[in-house]
Image (cartoon, rainbow, N blue to C red):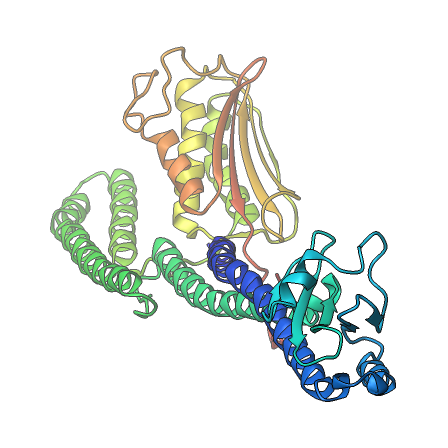
Length: 453
């Protein structure tokens, strides 16, 4: 936008200056010729006035020669005196030009005039009345160069003015463009912050009226979204809170069972359900931008150990490969665990018993400067059904179709990717997450570092 504004300003200024400077250059050319002609006319009239008394007698010819010679200095127009008998005092006539031309004969009639000969330049003729032997004529000849002397300087001045005006126009356009682009970029950064979940971000109305209007509407939209999300979170928390009553009733019913072992098992399940309800309430009231980081490697090992007894009961061989180092990713631990549970549960529910599966966590060098964390769950089952579609609520295996969608949304909400692939044999599901910065060691204080990029 800034470059286009500069280009438009340069083109417009150049067109306007062309329309103005071309007539001015022609005018300076005419003005230079008129000025040179006026000076030559004044010179011819002065010579004619000075030589008038001297030419009254033949004895004064030497005086006339001295006067003509005194005005013929280098760089000035050539001045000649053509006497009545056709003789010439001063520079000779141009080669091929007769001593007495038609213009001289016309001047001898008493007329002073200027004309442009075919050889170029300009001549000024002034008659000298009272000369012995007939009317003499003072002839001042201007060459083409003398006629337009000083014109190049005027053109250079005009060109300098034009360049200066173009530069001033570009400077003003650049300042205006910088203001527009800066206001637009700040508005875009505010929109990016809102898209990232920072609902406290607000745009500063600045720039032209249109951008101020957009900034005001964006602030209104952000406030409205904040209100709607707050209401939605409270509604979700209220609904989850209502579940506590039936859960408490289940716990009381479990305590009245006569079978102690069965009562403990149901009570444990009810306690797990209570914890899940509490997690729902906490998650519903948690600000969107307050996202804790989870250790992907630790969660993978913990969930693999959780599902290991059931896998052994089904005769499955499991393998877990994770780095020893922490791999923080910008996903809450409960959501990451739920995504991994959904993937492992799909293997246990939709592949024949005895089918082996493998959980792998590794770091790749792609994506963010810290790298990308990759979680893969691969099995050796029959593969995805032909009717599988990657849409929420759609399943080709007779289930709800939410398991893979939970994993997909967990990865994509964190800025990662979700991919499935049929292998030979089996299926491989891969989630990628951008790595979060490593927390500083306990007891140390991280030094601020300069921003990069």
